[in-house]
Length: 238
Figure 1: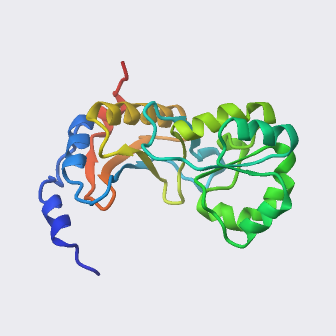
Figure 2: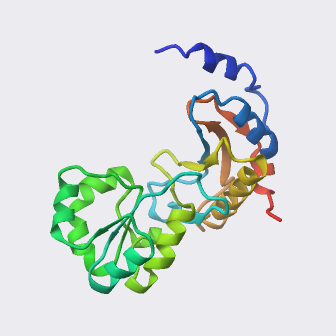
């Protein structure tokens, strides 16, 4: 197993592994223990009390973070005709309105962060499942990324403003970015609070017992900081 470097070990020494930190403490400590020489992403990792092998216990939704993610989100839209025109007007970075774009992606091009499609394009987009699916880029009605043409401006605006899709993985964990270490504490707190509210609302009716079991926060490359799940679920945004 590779050893961590001096910077990581020094950062980890500041974290008490036995303590459950309040959201405010965790945010402050995450920023303090970020040692990357770039504007690191603040990430939240959550263990849920669900069994994702059962369809009725799947946790999946989208949330628009009030202060965004602090990065330029590149949006690709699959649309034709009026939908393509609306997508361009709404600020989409790329509009795939012909087979040439489909072929480009089939050859491995994925220089975008979010893919949105109109229903009439899904027969073509379906060919790209093996490429886009593993990267979390496949448009999906449940994720709100397959929409009618007249709804494209709203979805594109949300995507660029900080629209985050979350989906429980096979081990019942969620991994979601909530901003950058350069954000002030209040903005990170409010993004975290809005995300927590979305997760609570996404609780499946079939879930039994404790739903949100463990939460950790970290900066890119930084050590994990345990967050008190009860205090996190009590967060409010003014």
